[in-house]
Length: 397
Ligand code: C5P
Image (cartoon, rainbow, N blue to C red; front, side):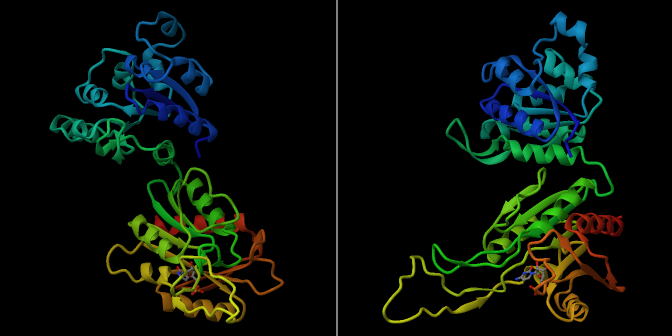
């Protein structure tokens, strides 16, 4: 999603500036072009050499650097990006932005730019909570400045609270969402994927053969149509898609909690193969072979995440899509499942032995909606994902 996007990255003077080096790397990994600007105070924390080495281009530092002006004026520099990102955005830099100061290169660029601006604040908790900073934040928000973070946590100064700069990958996700274009831009969509692992003891678990490839392809397809995707995944065989917020979980219970934490969303796609049962009381130490005979496992039912979200009275996503992996009477069973769970659509597939669908590259699905069953031709999981994402986009418009 960030391929060939141009980011003007202003690095302010805070200890979190070291994270901006990683941010440059993460943005460039995703194909973005990063033009770095380092404030005087920023230079106290990271060197121009390390910034330019990671960015793969020169770092701009001084408003009155005539060489810079000869090559590219500050006005042109401020407008040559798709997004201006300030990370770390110090209390001082934010105050300057709120007041419209232009007394160094960074503040001048921020005043001159006509492209969207995102700040990733980083400061001591008292400075963050100070009424002056809060006033500045309100002003900046009213001016249309986007915020990534800050997070709450331990700080370099030894205090605890809000003010920690968001992690580089969180900023990348926010940048991705800010630059999103496409029919799903501005929509937040949850996708569950992969199997769950239900522990028997610390070394053994119950699992299933889901590879996570269909859910991953769906998350990628939704993201490429501009959606902000929250991807809650069990331990899958395939890596999660880039540019989406990934929440790794192991058990069904953890998946439910991650799903609830991700709400509200515009749509939720439940592609995970969630274990129906867990071991009622998993052993905290490894179970030993005993002469006394075989162990017996007692099972408890797992929460049905799809049904729980489908039947929410408040905050139900506008569109809820479930999956049905069936081996017999696919359409009948999936149609009944749609009713029973209370979801809007069911993507049904025949996973009986010999279809090669579970863990394979292709899928053969029937989409069940309120209008009945729609048989799709057998196609790759990527094509199923793209077609489903298009359908989701049409239904959310
Ligand atoms: O009931 P069954 O497992 O066949 O339903 C499949 C659908 O329900 C899938 O969309 C799956 O992600 C979801 N599911 C769930 N929580 C469970 C079991 C299934 O969300 N505990």
